[in-house]
Amino acid sequence: MNQNTINVVCLKWGEKYPAEDVNRLYRMVSKNLQLPFKFYCITDDTAGLLTEVEALPIFQPELAGWWHKLSIYRKDFYGLNGTVLFLDLDVVITGNLDELFSYKPGEVCSVKDYGKCKWGKINSSVVRFEVGQLDYVWLGFLANQQWIVDHMHGDQDWLGRVAPFIELYPSDWVVSYKKHCQARGLKLLGIGDWLMRKGWLQPMGESKVPLDTKIVLFHGKPDPIDVVSTPYKIWKKAPWIKQYWD
Image (cartoon, rainbow, N blue to C red):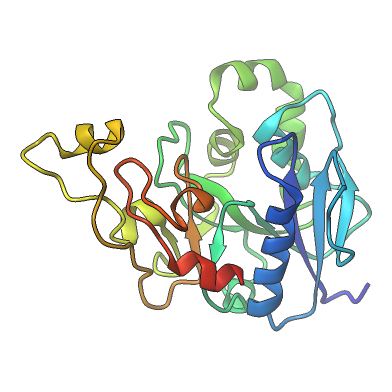
């Protein structure tokens, strides 16, 4: 592999996300990344993946869910080298990704957490690093695995705790669907949220993607599939998702 070829990596474990979500992410990357890259999926089930997606086996099968993401920081990462861009399957790519690699080269870069991360301020849906650069994150997890799994909500809690130096991409490049896309339904007399969560009132209108956005994060619920055609509880529908999926 060319030394300058970028490794784009995702994770599909269990049954939460189908193979089509991996294929869709690959297509979005292909449309929005002009730099040479190879696309990898760490998975326990290769059925249905495009031939352009190179499957990598789950490294530690006894782990569950997002904890597998910590294995991407291993020094011996499937024999790969160079730059890695890790992307979660529930992101929507809305703009060119090339600047993600020219921004503060050599540094570890990620995005701000907009959810309820208690141990750090990193959202691990988007992380750029060099292979082996964060090996201590994985080794520290192995040394304290049971305590971490019992006391932390997920992989990004541990990452933010032990790597607080991580640089954040500009806030207008990677945004939150909930926080930045005009996605929340209109509150009504203080009971609007309650009515929408019950399904007795639908949020009106559509969400919108801010100018210059490259990636939209969907942390927690809803997932993109939940709002692409209809509202979801208090969240407006987002038909713009489909144009980036197609």
